[in-house]
Length: 381
Image (cartoon, rainbow, N blue to C red; front, side):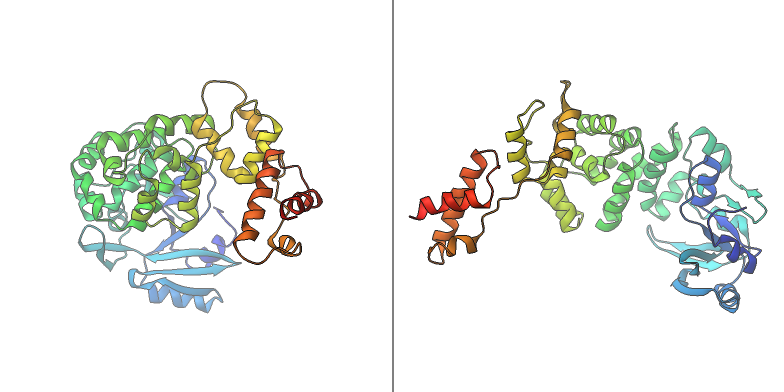
């Protein structure tokens, strides 16, 4: 059974290994398989030595938990020893290695993640994951409450998988999440932000986000406030838009406070703030107005703003097309041009540049360098 180039090479060295997790799930769901992870009923030092002896580079990416990465043809394949939990504390687990496949599957979060597949394509499904996948049910392995208490990140993982595979909410899971929702408050900002981005990036995350709101999880994660109606409108308008735009649509309160609290990158936070600013354009706007808007703001930001403010009127797709096609005007005059006219260095240079730029903007951003220089000379003469 071939997944990705390189997988067969790993199997040739570790024939007792099985593919686990997302690759099996996506294969059964008929989705593209992006990554392949293996599990092996061997101690990590044993399979690491066998891989290395076969000329495969081994990187100890998580050796404390029994995981290495085998590099084949420039692609990485994680290989992890089978494990059983010894102790958990709500986020981290103490594990011991085992050769028991069912014990390893039992420590996984959801039934759809607990399946494995051998080299011949045989599926090993100890907890009914295949049936749950076909039914669109995201169900915890074992008791939902117990699995969540082991690791509160599983609350967010539930919604991520529900957004991607779910159709019918699992009532025991929903009840446990509602009871334990404040457990997400103890998760790191980086973990929360990483999962939230992946939830909203699903093809259609509306049902999942709505369920997050109903269980109180969304309120715990985003105390700044949310606008579910706007979020759902943006998802409906453009299924392929960037996940960060969907976050901008979801947020109703202090965007900067949200970004600082969840430790967004500077680029992410700047985008959210920029997108939430007024659009200043409407369908049917003249070319001069569109050029002025582009001179002030990058086209991709303006396009993103259109989705947040779009109403039921016509012409929004046409406006987005113009914003994408039109070259962004760049004010041609620079400080050195003004200095060459004899203006002394200092505030006066900035004042001339600002005045000429206002004239250039009023004219629809059409003036070239020479016309801007001429205008500047009139001002300084």
